[in-house]
Length: 246
Image (cartoon, rainbow, N blue to C red; front, side, top):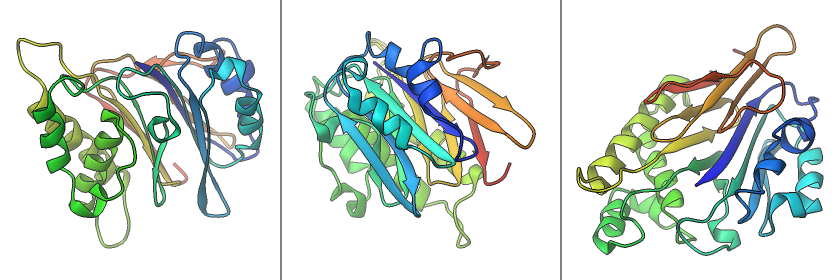
């Protein structure tokens, strides 16, 4: 299992607060999820990502990255390695073009059953399959999402509705391939963004959402409540998101 955090907010907002200094900040959560960390954001129209293999609470580079992450969308992750060794290639968030992706959970039977791994990879379009770098179930979930999104997106660019549909289709595909009634089911909390849309889906793990309206809008999702924000539980099976300017 892992812990994730995503926020859509004014770029001048200090991300060090929820990531480093607030009550139950993501850095504190890394005491229980110590197998590396990653923070991704958008800078000059491109994705920037910083990763570390130390626990976030023991790595000053995490604080430096949190201070540097000044963009409307920031996604961060601390890892508890259930599938794949602690390497940079296996460290979330994963990146492809403008897309950022993080996962909290585990695909059932992925680690132990080669047929499950092969069938999941068969669900990935060859264009995206060539992008595989690591050994995790999470990276394969990401590429299945991109495959489902590519089949649904409109000519004018991606919408929040299309992202939600692709997230649900990704969850359904993975459950169909990996889950058995006699085995522990997959847990598939996903968090994605292209810099304009930020969306998260819940399946099998806790997920929370917070939104502050007004000029200083803040839309955030997290595995655990952080700080003093008004967090609400995302219902099981639901998808929440934020698009453009609201």
